[in-house]
Length: 232
Image (cartoon, rainbow, N blue to C red; front, top):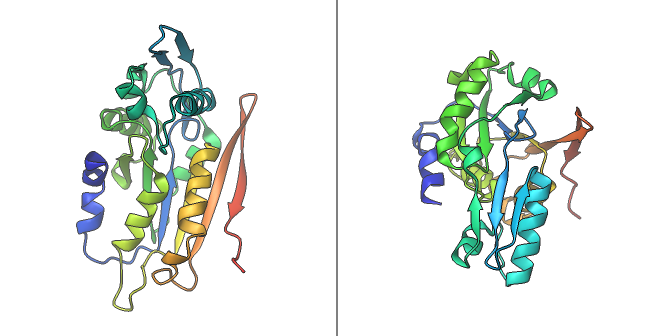
């Protein structure tokens, strides 16, 4: 979490500016498909190679349930229990394939917005990710990267909102556009940013969270739009 906080320290320390929209993009299976693999050796000697984010989440959820681990991201806890989890492929951008339905959106930078790449990868991946954006012709100087290292992206967004409070006590962030493929992360953001009544005091009256779920249909990608539902 310490590294995560350092990643957005510049955001927190900035003086007020007329930014009303945050555009937040996941990386893997959102901006690009890569051929990254996670190699796992369980304490009993069983070895598994995980080749997609869905497979990774399913494996980690099953291992966490087996070991009685309760955490948003169980990786660190499982390592402490003797699991060897090799995620070195995710320190680079390995054989990327651009997901143009998303990168075409990224290339446009509305004047009242800020654009972020918020990835569950570790901090060492941020340089390669930014280099890859430049290769695609996306101006990385207008994109700010944050590595959550598996921590909650919902918590990231809440921290962003709370650290941009105006004189009236409301956040100056009135719109978040979130591009993500992981249903786990989407559910986390919906629960924490959309449904938590404790945020009502800082949300502007016109606040809107728009989630754009990236869906892979056999290599063809499209977007499913998800919006907050009004609470009764």
